[in-house]
Length: 162
Picture 1: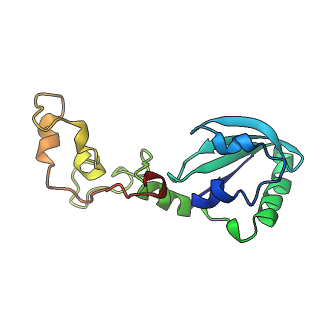
Picture 2 (picture 1 turned 90 degrees about the vertical axis):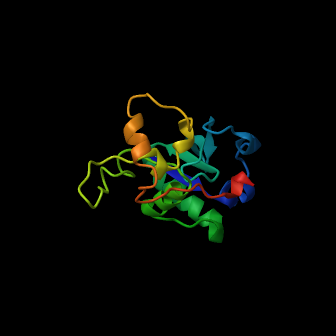
Picture 3 (picture 1 turned 60 degrees about the horizontal axis):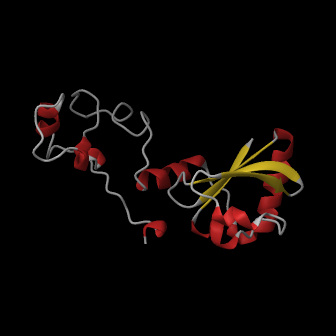
């Protein structure tokens, strides 16, 4: 079973965490993990950033999940707010963290019926091709789509970018 804590204040306050939680959790590297105990239960805590904010995922036995979740809500008070997954997805997309195929034109096709597929121009990834590079597979299609974007994903400046 997994639960997650994400957001700017997650690491700063740790209001949801018991006093016995190792201080080293603050120093976990991105995608680092630690095995410890949380509210008397064995857990594995993984530092993540699903929404591009600092976050933690807590892995536990299914039988311990309700106890851990309820205690996080109780201890966290106003600092902890359950959200639905679609809310996290909105933050993830705004942070330029895209999933295939759900966040591309296979899910949202072109209105004019042209073939599905997102361009590097739309995804904000045009920097991955040198401006004067030609002759690669797909180069004609790539350059033909410039200026024909249906949308443009622009990376926002987040809390951790500052």
